[in-house]
Image (cartoon, rainbow, N blue to C red; front, side, top):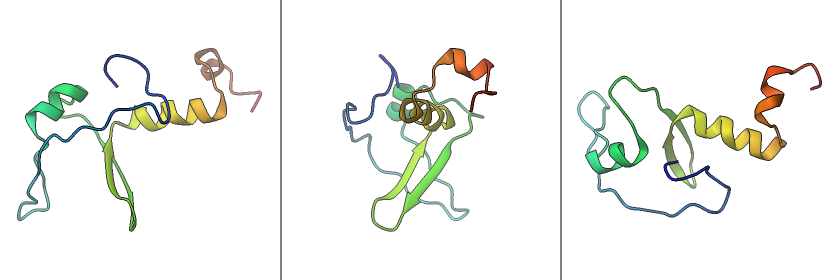
Length: 84
């Protein structure tokens, strides 16, 4: 996330607007949200969800960063995965 590393439970919620689902199932992410999160045309986004919480749209790196935080992985560990 811009302005620092995402930490579990320390994010601020924002409302960026709404998105209408088109005939082909596509949505347009509001411009303010794309700018805020640094989303550019051609970027890949991860879609997660469940029946209770709904959908989450995020960059795949966010999930990787969260996994590293949960598992206590450091950047140095990424080069040496033999210890896992």
